[in-house]
Amino acid sequence: MKYTVTAKEGGLVKADILVRFFGKKEFKRDAAKVLGALGIVAVPDDDFKASAGEVAMLYRQTSGKGALRVMLAGVGEGKTAEEYRKAADAVARKAVDLHLGVLALDCSPIDEWSKQSKQKPEALASILVEGALFGAYRFDRLKSGKLDKEEKDSDKPKAIEELMLAGCGDRLDAVEKGAKAGMIVGSCQNQARDLVNLPGNHLSAEELADAAIEAGKRGGFEVTVFDKKKITELGMGGLLAVNKGSLEPPTFTILDYKPKGKAKKTIALVGKGVTFDSGGISLKPAQGMEEMKSDMSGAAAVIATVEAVAGLGLPLRVIGLVPATDNMPSGSAQKPGDVITTMSGITVEVGNTDAEGRLILADALTYAKKEYDPDVIIDLATLTGACIVALGNSVAGLFSNEDKLAESIFEAGQSSGEKVWKMPLWDEYDELIKSDVADVHNTGGRGAGSVTAAKFLQKFIDGHKRWAHIDIAGPAFPAKGGSKTPGATGFGVRLVLDLLKSWS
Ligand code: BES
Ligand code: MN
Ligand code: ZN
Picture 1: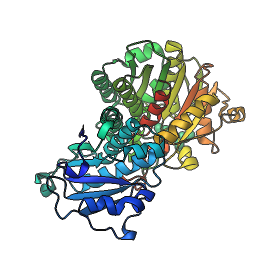
Picture 2 (picture 1 turned 90 degrees about the horizontal axis):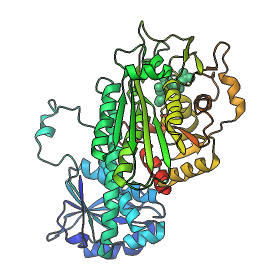
Picture 3 (picture 1 turned 30 degrees about the vertical axis):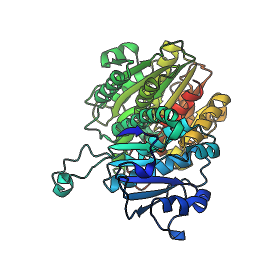
Picture 4 (picture 1 turned 45 degrees about the vertical axis):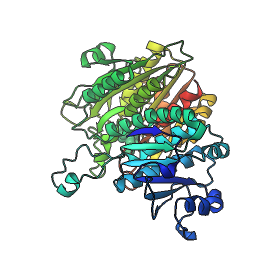
């Protein structure tokens, strides 16, 4: 999908469909006039309420050079960025379903949207493009089309080819700038979704590392991949223990973006990269196990975020750290009860081999602190089913040892629409992960599973003062029916980008 920006009026530009956004109030006020000018007589009252994400199709009798189809898209109250994102998402989703190639979005009311939402025109343009890319996303690269000849041979567009932002008037430059940024954010987020949707046999730890290398080439930043030998030399005992049952070697990938000028801050982003989580010897039940191809969603979000930061040229140094392996049962796999030594020297009793994410993250956190001593460390991980029980499929769990950082991440969640909710890290929970034979136990019993997992991670930050852990198990890969497009959401990319933008 490419975008274009024009001052020309939406109703006059050549496109397959003209999209007109309306807030609830504006629809009551302006519908007759706006639609009348397009040669549309009336819209029955109940057919369209202009709620955010609601769309309705209308058709003009004659349109000259302009589009014959008109889509009404609701933005609800039009007061938050989220409402505009939702609207663009719904528009693009519908357009792909209808096989429409060229969309013209009428942006003529952009100053009014800007006033209502307190978002600059540039930011709104970015949000519209991000939302459109999000809604247009389909994961079809593993479909050969062999069994669906009609679909394959049809010459109708299978994706949106062009998104035209029309009617921009004297906001042309701002819209252009915003749209460009929106393309970067939206396409990076969709890259993350692709990685997550790829199943275990299409994405090994080495292939995940290759994806990071590709991101580095596109974004112009350095990527280093440690192989098993180097990982062994470094003593990353957590990553090696989880990898023991596997036929494929682990990788540890470092993405290092340095801005042109002086960096305002250094941020380390750590992402869980379990390419498939069978549970290991503590094998998971068959039901739903295939969803565990998504257990590298944290890693995908980190890779995509670093690429987007580079694309946007933010004045921050951002280091991505991705420990990766699958978690498999076999004769060589680690066993429940094993005691391992992590890179930090801390020993861990592995009570349950299915609590593997924290083991590989432990080493990555140690490495982040030791090697870079960054201003901020943030890890993203599909860490616990317990977090889904607590918060459901649309909200991530947030854990942090610094209130101001937690507050900033919460705000970024609100503005990006990728919401987080803060959970406690109180000392009481330490009792639950005590081990009789090692320094710490990798599980904490039935209660507070997402908190004990976070408490475990906290032991490996070595006293770092600004750390946050985001458990994205729920929103990264919502269960069937949990989101409009099946599969991966790329959750975390927009969240962390909004946070990083606020520091830029
Ligand atoms: N990858 C899972 C967590 C998960 C579950 C993510 C469902 C997404 C959806 C993680 O490795 C895991 O298995 N956690 C265990 C921990 C337990 C053994 C202490 C869990 O949540 O059951
Ligand atoms: Mn597991
Ligand atoms: Zn896992």
